[in-house]
Image (cartoon, rainbow, N blue to C red):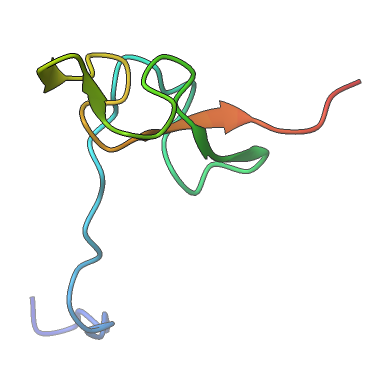
Length: 66
């Protein structure tokens, strides 16, 4: 479109796929990284990738509370 006034904001951000243990997507207000409760941050359970965090060692969890 010739009238399109969108501008480039630079390279697209890399978005981390959600792991089963994530409560919400990264960047969601009220959410932050926490150490995976199952693998304790190692990303591994025995000789396999941790299924809860997807091998990252962290999960996205809600912070705060009421």
